[in-house]
Amino acid sequence: MLTALLLAAATAASGQTGLEDALDAALLSARAAASRPDVVVDPKARGSWFRKVSSPDSSSFDGITGWGTLPRPAFDLDRQHAPAPGEGAYTAGPLDNPGVYLGAHAAVTEIDAGLKWDHRYGPDGRDTGEYAWRVFWRVASPAGKVWANPKPGSAQDVYLEPGQRFAMTLRVRPDGTARLDVRGAAGGPGTHAVFPAGGFWDGARPLPRRFKRVHAIDQFATQADGRRAGLEGRAAAPTRAALDGGRWDGTALLGQKRRPLSGALAVEWRGPDEESGYGRVFPAAVVDGKGGEDITVTPPQP
Image (tube, rainbow, N blue to C red; front, top):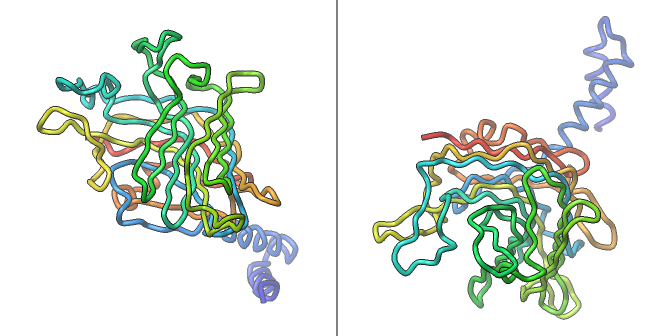
């Protein structure tokens, strides 16, 4: 059927270009249409400017890997937070929180893990007053929500810089844990973390799951009591913050076969805050054959 349609389109369009050129054009058009991800708008996904591409639900894969160049963040000077009395010093700084990370989803568990823009801590564990891309992981499950980083000052607390090469891999394991590996350019700093993340296996049998790659600006607000709180579930805020100059060079699903997160294996997720102006917020949102794309986030400004 596809061949017949292509031949019909080619014949109708042949004219001056000839049948062969028209057929080539029709084939290219068909391939381009086939490579476009399905789009899902999640009405609950509010409170951040996120670009998320996932695999379909499947039991065929147990991990995901991605590599590329870290973007450069810019921030809104009017969206800064000073900790309230008794509030942790880690809350100080921008209310816009950029991230470049991987993740996994099962029926009862959600994982986000990779790199977030965060305070940089020195060998003594003290805040240096500087910022960099820092390893993090968070898990939401029936057991509760966990957000974690490597211990400040430890050898595992690795920092990467904007413009630096990165590679990261996330796997879910039959023993009820997940493992995150993150490193910089070949021979550069690297670290890993293993943490509880059940719900992906029934013994040795894999349960349906999907994997994702994300670049985003997650958001916070300063509440009436002066404390910082996430905007999850509320409308995302206009901001002058932005991400640019980075790239996912590739993303691949891991299992018995390694497959690019692209074409029929890619699903694009959007939130209602960004859906109407998606092309303006994510002007580089095109997944290539290696599962890669430029990292650019330009939210609407106030």
